[in-house]
Image (tube, rainbow, N blue to C red; front, side):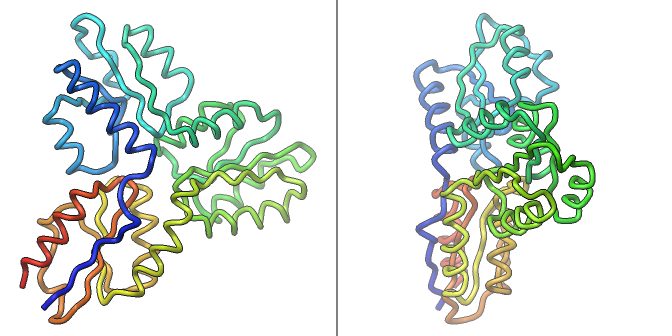
Length: 284
């Protein structure tokens, strides 16, 4: 018999909850369509659910192709965007609902106000990182210690240096990077911009992974946070598998008597975790 437990600390972060609640409330009140600039959450199953309600995700290069029926409304997701995007949306005629996470907004503000050089630890091309880089023309991005070495080679040690991180990066990796930066450029202004909710998940997930015989980690294929947390989970428990839907679950992963943990990214809805847990229980 397989016993299954859902990680009580997993599920949407506050910023995602706010964005999705806002979208659902708008769609219920207006009974129409709502655009979001990019996927409101990096989870295919949740996007399908919201799409059925009338949410339409737009890529940045699709904005100009939208046929406007009166004033259309577009939602800025929790990741945030660069300043020029707001202007582009207004010129097109969109009504804007801004659901940028307050934590991200604060980081954007700090980067915008920086008078010196700026380094950002984050994933190249990630929507949050694009929004951060757009705040300051001097911002440079690195996503590994190898890239950091190249970035530091271009830094002027005589100028002030501000260091930030994408909110969902690994706290351990960020600390390692900041230690190197502080040695190479003494006096660097290091900003603690890892989301506290994300940071606490690392310790909690490590414990959760060790407490179970096997772990099924549920996240969308494009979730940056999901990749970081899955890798952490896998390092603590080799019998960890990542799935995005119940169809991905393989019976051969499990042994009789297993105590299986089901966890997920900050972009994974609770209802999907429950669906996965139920599917595992029904394998018996």
